[in-house]
Length: 140
Image 1 (cartoon, rainbow, N blue to C red):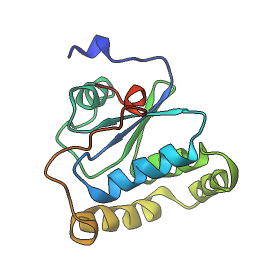
Image 2 (image 1 turned 135 degrees about the horizontal axis):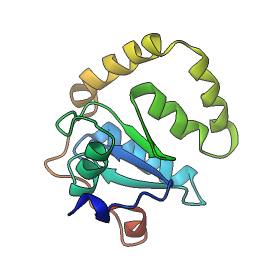
Image 3 (image 1 turned 30 degrees about the vertical axis):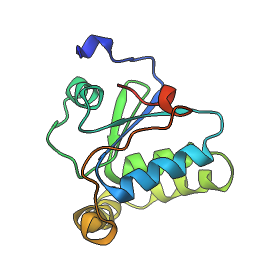
């Protein structure tokens, strides 16, 4: 898939490790708490995910960080996670206030979880396949 076929409309795209159970659970959580369908998704391993990473000058082999692409910018690690939570309705918006904690401190915790996610939550043999109802929210 050519990079120019990946939408760059400023909408929010969450890039996630498609074989990570924690990451897949996080995507399901976002879907359940995002009734307006603000967020779209692509696995980091997919052609669309790699194209978005390249477009934003990010390493296409780095799979230990969630990435949020929104408004022409890419956010990773704790910045991405907190921006995603802050973009959900209701009480989840309050999580955005945690960005007041210095990023290096937030990213230490994020990195610890990222390094242990397969051991704690397991992994799948292949990326998740979205249900027919959700397919429109996933980039190919």
